[in-house]
Image 1 (cartoon, rainbow, N blue to C red):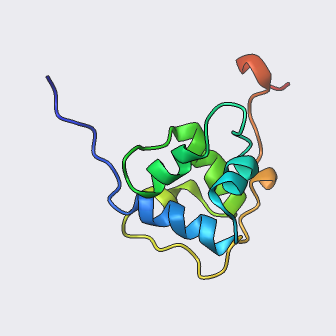
Image 2: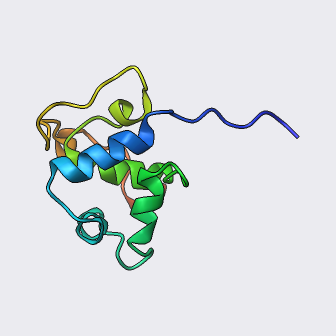
Length: 105
């Protein structure tokens, strides 16, 4: 069996910080992430306690809700901004692909 994948040590702390800085309860955070149909709000508590690690797509949703780069979540050496949501505008990023993996022309 190979080595386990390294995990960010501060991820749980950062996810908890995001929710609290936005003034949301765990059920409200789940709704804000748009995941209320696919998981129970107790999953947010598991993320915040470091019992589970969110999928990369869930981390992307967190970063969009918080207005931060995903790198700020994953890099233990980076701190989150004091004020959330931040000023990162994900919708300004140019997309190379459209749905189903086809390239734009």
